[in-house]
Image 1 (cartoon, one colour):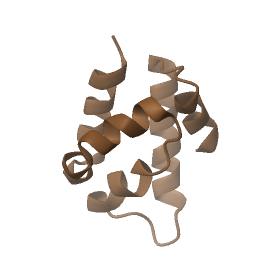
Image 2 (tube, helix red, strand yellow):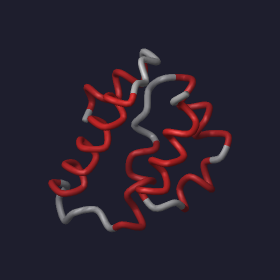
Image 3 (cartoon, one colour):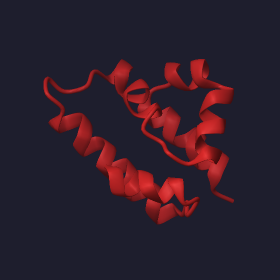
Length: 83
């Protein structure tokens, strides 16, 4: 999953990068020891982002983002970073 987070660090956020990121997250959730419960998925990935722009976005509304389902989080992520 790190290679996709590197893309976020460099602010190269494209639809392709978001699609690959989503797939990497699903793989991470599936292969994590014991799996990742649906209500913990977003909180498990939020602190993984390296780019300051994304970190600022997360910090500005962390409680709300943490409460979202992964699907809802992706919708918000797309709205925030894609034209």
